[in-house]
Image 1 (cartoon, rainbow, N blue to C red):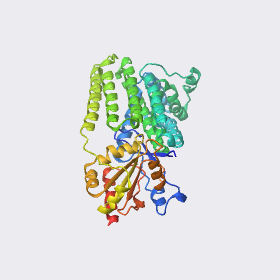
Image 2: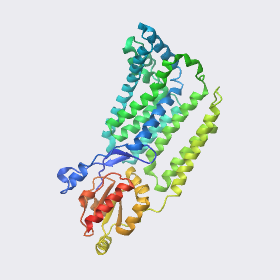
Image 3: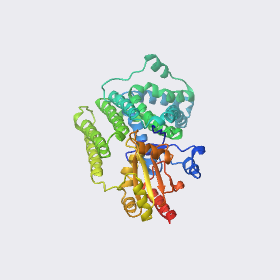
Length: 450
């Protein structure tokens, strides 16, 4: 029997990119008390707390950086000229200009935010396939394809008719709104690969509100510099001249997409190699952007910018390798057998059964973070019998029997048993929990075992 799995994206891994939560059991098929636990948990957010703040700040910064790409930079004087002309009409000066700028950024934000919502809704339909290694490879291949465009290996071009239609100017506040609505089409040859890569990430999370927020934030980052330049158009002559540095910015965005692609295929690698994969990407990006790339610019700070980016890549690679190398010992797992359960009864210890798969991103986060936490490891060793059931590959009769016996519909699924072998149904987990929250579950399991 094949393991039927479906996921909803609800959590990020330690690198800021997206993962998946197993779907709840149907009420009619769940044992008494389990439906409430699985189907109606307090919905964890895909991004929350500081993870949300730092991710949105990074996306905002990415939107601002897109203004430095070759296709956006030539639009700056056109935008400033348009806003400046609107400011002089009607004698309302900067007050009128502020309204035009707001309409402009709003139009830009609406276009991209709708894209984010559509991508997240589409992702909800494809989320059940994301446990398939071939799907992960396909997503990573798409991201790498877009990255090669940003790295200059091929060009993404739109039909000239579509570009001309998008560039038409209209008068009044609607004109400013239409400029924002269509800027993404005009700039698509440069920002297209990056935005499409971001769409791929958002689609994997299956969260419409998060898709809207992410692309609204990206749009603010993209539109804010143009708006500020329009407000202070007299400072245009102080901008750096166009040149090779804009190509360098494109390549930086390309490496961002390659890093995202590496994140998607991490579950296909053994746990001791996934951090090495990301470290290699960071190392290659640092060397290329910092020293191997020959892009030049007329302003003096550009060499420092390149060197700083290169050093940042090397530091990130060293951090990833060091974090992996210094990772402490994890939980000591046992294989499932009846003798192990009998030992638990004799020792009067509760049992934790972890249904795991190597291609499951939240399973890997459990293993790398929660099950390597010092406090979790200590309590597991002293007070629990820890059993891992690896369902990476189908066809194992014992695993298939356990999947049926415990009604496991997806991974990760973590089952808590008391010392008599009975499940503590309200403690079952079907999504990732950080170490502190997992320790609370362990304490509750011990209390209910007495």
